Length: 367
Ligand SMILES: *Cc1c(COP(=O)(O)O)cnc(C)c1O
Image (spheres, rainbow, N blue to C red):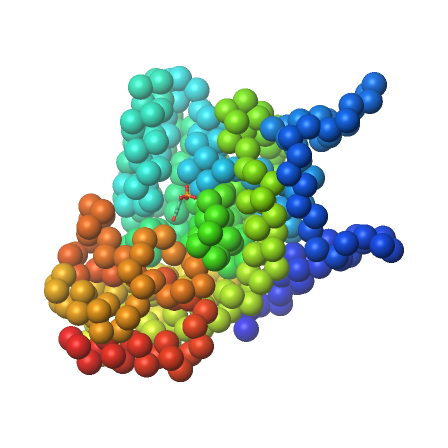
């Protein structure tokens, strides 16, 4: 069971709307796909044009804010949220640190899109961050756990080093969502998350968000979104609000099943990386920092053929991305990640425990 404060956050998330209803109001979030609003003499800033604000977007942002503990700016994808933070925090001549072993497109964004604009991108492996020289750095972007290596960054320690160096710390919290890890409370200046993954959770929408308690940065993030046009449609925001109501329920099943799958694979001799296992190198740090060890398991089979046999026999869905209702697996070497050919990133879904365990057994029997 998730800790009490996380349950309280999940409770606020679930009842965000019902707690504010007047008699006769609809219980479900209204979907309002309007672009424009009737204008009076002094229009409210949130009722002019939907690239500035839209009530369905506001609803989804308010729900996410219950989880993040700070105002939220919703964007069209996780990458749009990361780009928004970089554009809001950086200018020509600045230096940004990105993880050398994290989400691939974050590196491409920094190296191929921002570098030609005069922003220096420095790639640092996640495990070297604790000792990295941060002098002259304006923004440090980290992922914890990292994707796909599942390495953990000590966030309070890194936040202190960033503060001392005058750098802002941005944490990509996609793996955990704000229910499993609260980077702002651990010292980060801003958090980004791909809601495309577990927050959306049904493999049917691309969305992302940033959150910060720094009001000036929040205003800048809203301006960047407004003027770059990375504004989600009302339907996507509505789908997200609907999905968020079951986030805690899904995560609880997914994390419990991931722990069971990790243990079973390890018991069968597969090299497993899962922060919830005592043999994970940073198990104690993960336990301090995360409310639960997550639903992603790294599993290294003997070689590519063994990983493929496991997938064929188990029937586990081959798909990239993670955090959906279906258990799925991605052989990351095919995308050029620095992992062995037999490495699978397993995203454990919400299947009933029995049939999921049976699928894993079928896969192991084929090894
Ligand atoms: C998927 C992912 C992203 C990008 O999200 P999109 O919605 O695909 O743009 C960013 N960071 C991490 C850690 C991710 O897993």
